[in-house]
Every structure is written in structure tokens, then in C-alpha cells.
Length: 114
Image (tube, rainbow, N blue to C red):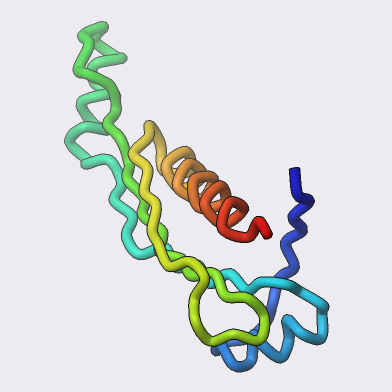
């Protein structure tokens, strides 16, 4: 299993990221954007609260949905080795975003293998 170490870059453009990645001896640059994030509807959340208070099952508090778009570049290249997106729909905002990022990480590690 390859060892992957994340190194944060402070660049705001791909060309700046390329320079900074070379300085920090990074093999790849990963650009990630949270392209959409939908929280559970207020009605579902409210229904969940009332359901708990009254003992009536209202089907849960609802699910949040997160989508991330990402591109993986080899340092020194302007062509993306991987350009994709991942999404997740889970109970809770943090769980949805975490699941989408975990799926992104699996895709990136697979694409970065020699």
C-alpha cells in the first residue's frame, strides 16, 4: 500500500501551486471544490424533533448531501491525470461531507499509483 502524505499549499492558481509543489517536493497536486452542499430540509429536522418529543416515528431527521469536484495533476503537468467528482448522502452535514471526501481520497490514491 503506498504511503500518501498530504501537504497543504497556499497557492491560489494552478501555476502557483506547481511552483510551490516543486519546492515542497510533492509528486501531485490535488484541487478540490465543494461544488454543492444540501442540508436536510428544515421540515424534516423539525418533524424529527417533534417525532422524538411525541414518540412518533417521522422517518428520521433527513439526510444531507455533499458533492466535491476534484482534479489531480502530476507536479509539472497542466493536464489533469484525474478529473472527477464524488458525492454522498448521509445523516448529518459532517457525515455527508466526510463520506464524499473519503470517496475522493480513494479515487485519488488509485489514480496516483504508479
